[in-house]
Image (cartoon, rainbow, N blue to C red; front, side):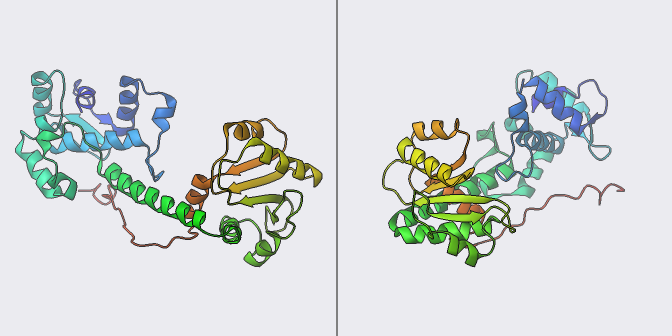
Length: 294
């Protein structure tokens, strides 16, 4: 919060997007850190944190917003910079009645369990919500993997059929179902269309497997692809792949995608295979355009 407030100490008006760039430079963020997204992918993590830092210090009266996306320092903001040369956090902001009233208005569940003077560093509301979502998602994915490991091999074929169709491959479910498990020879379990017209073909290997899948199995699959003059293949398992297997597919000409149990359950979650929606939450924000003429 203090670096954001310091950016205003020249007394001039500042635009939000310029402040984000200034603060990214202040913290020496790498390009990768600058581009990091919230788990939902809806916004950049750093932009989101700058936005909420600005919200907090504005509600404390340290900044004013004369126009949309514009901010300027107040006399109170200058006073805080003088009196707190090292750090501006929630303890500082909580001294101002305006800010305490703002906190009371928010009155969110997480704030009821965490006093402002005990939380010098906080997550933004979006981060709290998305972290909770990720916790639920990880548990569901773990449960999915347990179900797959306890199911017969034939069930994995059904899962793969449903998944590839949901992802836009294989044509219809009937076509994909006929393709998968049709051959079963030379290390190939099935064939699916990469596009609805069948302009390209992908060969599949789907194995439940009890232990780690090593390089020999992947080499066998690659050899089967070469025997079919195929250029693309997907090897799916509910277990894991060895480092040698991963290294092998990275340096051969044939394009082979390895899908382990963790990745499989993530894809199932993303495409609605084996899961059902329990609840929907709609997150809204202020429409600044609506209030632009106020």
